[in-house]
Image (cartoon, rainbow, N blue to C red; front, side, top):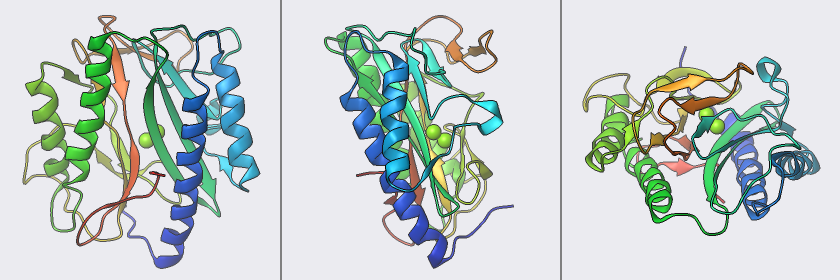
Length: 249
Ligand code: MG
Ligand code: MG
């Protein structure tokens, strides 16, 4: 069931969103050659806890980290590890959730470590731009297909792939709520948007084919063809006018 949020929920989500955004910023600052993904996860968890919130992902379905940290051809759900060392030229997606007074923020950004290739830069820029094109459609009265089609048209126009097997989602009291928010679709179709819905819009974009596979740990999702992947996400409050990005700091 889709939840339309009340003022109290929205107030808590603004705080959860700010904490989430700050944690991603701090994690991104720590992306350097030679650093482990566990080190970044520690920084993120410490910030969330210092703010009086809890990491949404820690223990979610048994996930062992506070952030999902996914590198290069890894799309989502990378488990932080002291043995996973970031190298110069890597692109590193940091996906974080924070829960404050029972309400979640969910956001992701892909960061460059040092000197990344031009093609990796273009992919990251396109993913961010795709998010903003989709988010611009998150206005009361529009439909979910307006968001998905705006993302898909732009991304496929550049020759990139839009991941189909994983999608955005409602977010609030639960980390994952209805409705599903695909990064593809047909304009004018799908669930109608109402003011005070809160949704995570999160394009996952591949340099090659959009097909993905789950690794042996049951979590890590990588591109099947080994091509680079990029991910960008904010928790978005739908309004009658301009959408409010709750996790943007
Ligand atoms: Mg996320
Ligand atoms: Mg999400």
